[in-house]
Length: 160
Image (cartoon, rainbow, N blue to C red):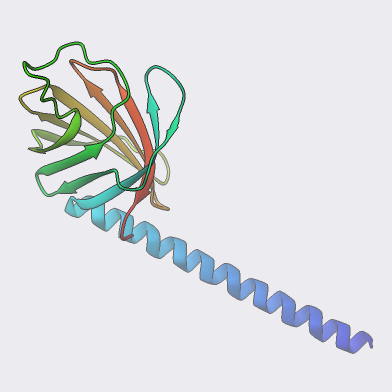
């Protein structure tokens, strides 16, 4: 009876160690994929949560995203807030546009988190996007504009 319990315990211990090793290998591979995507400047962040400057957080559908394609930024993000200037005729894009990235700079990163800043400009406004991506693929985006309230978004890096 004691021998059976000992063998069962030993088997359980070996399975737990193997699972931990697999998990560590998965995390290492995920971190490598995140670093490669960011270094190549080809990645897409799908948004799950929006945080307007005024008011509480808003759950959003996974249809919204921020995508970097080399030197191009594709922003399809919701905007909840105040615009201080509007275009004649009310044909504003808000945070939905495709523009060339004017500057792209790597910021000092925390342990396991990549940080960088992008500046873009269109006919409506000038924007600064500050992005943080964890080694696990979680992302946070802060959007600062000259003519509208700031926004923050949380989401996940796709294809990592």
